[in-house]
Image (cartoon, rainbow, N blue to C red; front, side, top):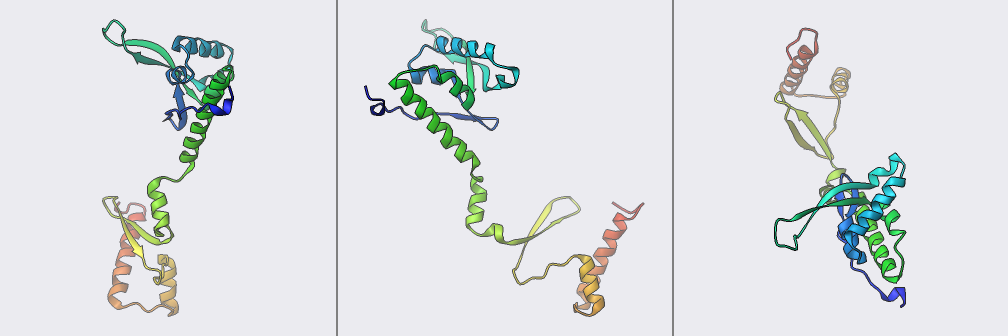
Length: 198
């Protein structure tokens, strides 16, 4: 049979601790193998692996239906990373196995590409041009941030630059605004001085 004629459905993978993973149960089902045989093959690989490679196979427990109708049965299972899947699936042969290997590889690639994309809210903000804007963030006495949009026409200066510009006469500040500015600066300096009020 031509391998290209066989199509496998895309497996459902999960992201666990930032890694894309599949389970030994999914592999058994996809490849038409007995789960206990898949677990046996994984354990044989684990025995041969150096310690730094062991995390590609994480031992876990799977619940399966009790054929007698009683309580579900707990069975040993594994969660595999891409590398674990690749190592295990290398031993699977035939056209059907090839189709499922390709489906798994495509699923791993798709999910890993999605993980590399910026989070949806950031992408939406970038598309709206918000990330190109300027914002002033102040932290009040309660530590809560207060965010203000800085218009493109506004000049943003450090307190030192502002005082220097006033002293040079480059900046004219209404007396009330200057008094507020000086009062705020003195208050902040008092908090910073040794023995000052926090």
